[in-house]
Length: 577
Image (cartoon, rainbow, N blue to C red; front, side, top):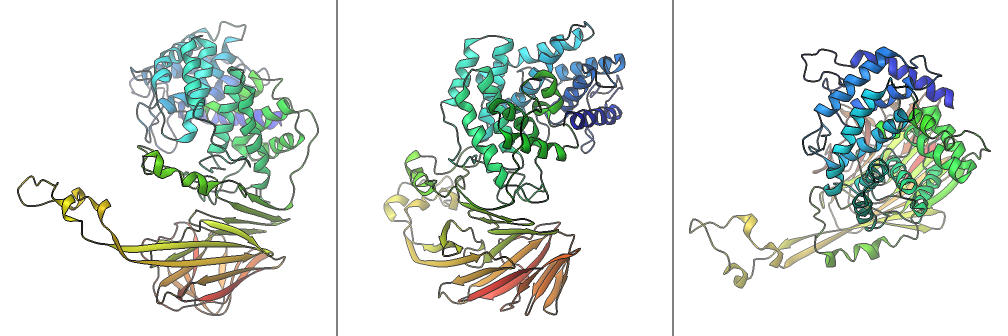
């Protein structure tokens, strides 16, 4: 796998030569012009990312760029760009968002610390100017890391890892103390190894990488336990194609096609650390998907050169299972944790962040060779399936009751299937009692804006409840979705199956609505890709609405909708062919 990583880095190094701004009159001079955005940025996925790749080339005797003087000069210009674009407070800005950002500075610190350590251990003085600039950049970030905060759960471990590297370079007990402050919040993983953000495509790997570095630099081996558990869990979150399950992510990788490439770095490190044959196999699997170096903080070639013993490729391999049923977070006491929210005081309003209340929600992963399915709670889609080349990306139910998409928050095993349930509530607000109104003061002597009224004191009247259950029964050739409502009448409901654009629909009951939306009004619908297809039946068209309020259909996908009116009790069959 080393050769694969080497060739990937070589190809990327050549490619990015054309994107460096070499115009001395340009404000981006020395930086890398992002191929998509058209500007240079100092964030971890942009200019520093290229710096890591180029350094990994010039210090590697196996590279055609080994000690290349032109590339070293380009690196010097790049390091000067980084110093110019470092704000006076020591931060950098992400660019697309997050300005003067401590956590984004932390990502860069973790990456450039490794780049600096690798350059600094070289015997040649060819790299002295670049080393000096990198050291200055890193030293300037110390105040940021000692005082800076975060947005998201994973940012805490980014900052912790960055603090641990700075302490290696500029020993300071205050840096360790600040890292301990973040760690004192407790590591946010379930027993099965799932992180708060449930991000299999991005932030799992970020958490794992960062806590590995923190464990090594701070001599805290216990920090590797959640890393281990997540890496073990990931064997159940890979489709037969190598695609990673992103169908229930709480971050921007939700529904985005992803693979294991950004796990290569941590799987290699942990395979050697634990002498774990499963991790070694997963590292090989991840390497197959690598087409470009990762961001600056997880560059695989830097890892091979800086940690040769830790990244060795020896040892046995244990392949991942291709037949299993795995219930994730089955025992996690999510409802007990949520019951404590009222006593915390923030009422799920976390400034500049999200509460991520789906953390610990149960998930069922099913695989039988080329068929892979996911049953999900607390996410817009409750069911997805891969069968050969057929990709049913998701299944959602929307109603006019709430209105919008139904989020199923309970999952129970029943006989040979799984029951998802959701109880929705909607009521009406009574007048505010007069004693609470007497406390209000008008500015103009007349109006009281709606937003200043003490709405919390209104009593609820005519509270309505509406329950929907879905029983999903797996089968070798036929999956059944038994969808049932309570007896509340005349609630517009729509079930939508979401497919990728590669396939085609057929069937007499399939009616094109607009763009990539279709109705299955009756009978059967087949969705086919190559020699594989799935058949959905029977159709339903109890009302004529294209979409329901507060629901939107995803761009870049094909949608097949069945329209129902409550009460209903239907069994939908999905046949694999």
